[in-house]
Length: 96
Image (cartoon, rainbow, N blue to C red; front, side, top):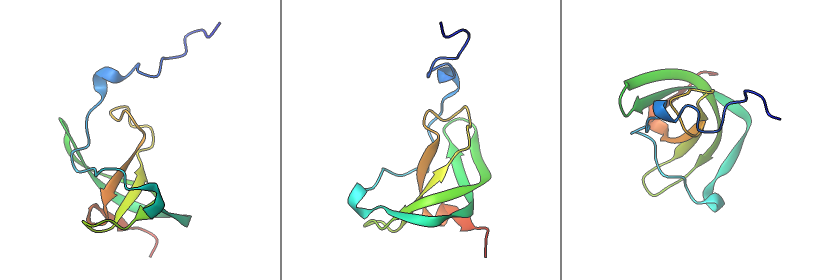
């Protein structure tokens, strides 16, 4: 019925943690950014090390440890979830 559609975990053997990601902040702290902001984000993968990507940030939140932002990973097969939360210091705005 579904043909050759991949299962949700078809790339599980490729998944890696993003070691500089932070915990999801409480929903009541999260603030939408409209419009979304273009950013350069620094990711540190569990096995592959550091990578810098250009992506979008659509939500931010103040936390006790400082502000954090929600960034999209654009379908990177190493990520189980296609987004992550990073400290603002791991991002830089591109649209200034």
